[in-house]
Image (cartoon, rainbow, N blue to C red; front, side, top):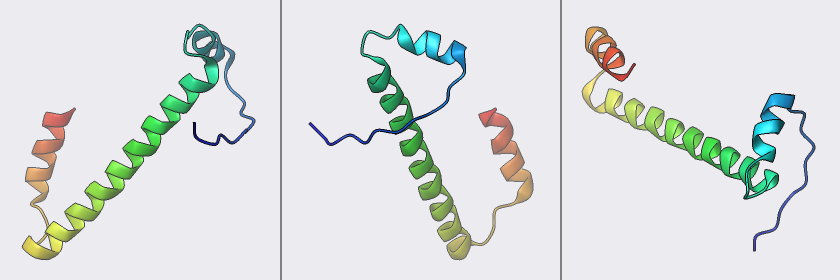
Length: 74
């Protein structure tokens, strides 16, 4: 079992209502959600770093192509 750190947070009542219904428990659910957010942020940083490396290696991307890919991802 890993060491846990206690923190106080303020949440909207409707969020608490939903999370209180989770059979895994409130803290476990919040921890899983925040762990996923930490992982998402790490992936975003890695992606930004990779794109920066590609810019150095191949030059900046064509803005029209970037917009095209952005439309596909929406």
